[in-house]
Length: 92
Image 1 (cartoon, one colour):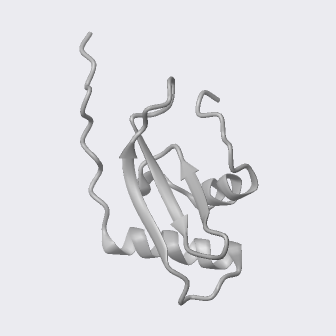
Image 2: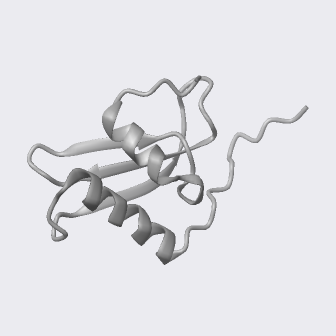
Image 3: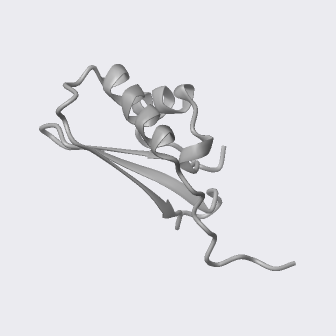
């Protein structure tokens, strides 16, 4: 069995990225001029999937949201859950 220490980040289309931002604006009820930064990162937590999505919402105070999925795999319900539970357990 081989372990991929450097998994490839899934390709994200502009449409997928915009959909995720649209969901965030809607769920958080924030102004569309609010900056949202979204990045796919290798997850370093034990037991979590190899790629996680880190979202920074530039409100005051700033808000950091982590979803233990790659952007193309994120559904609306994942965003709702991540906002409701900001400290998720990736081992669930």
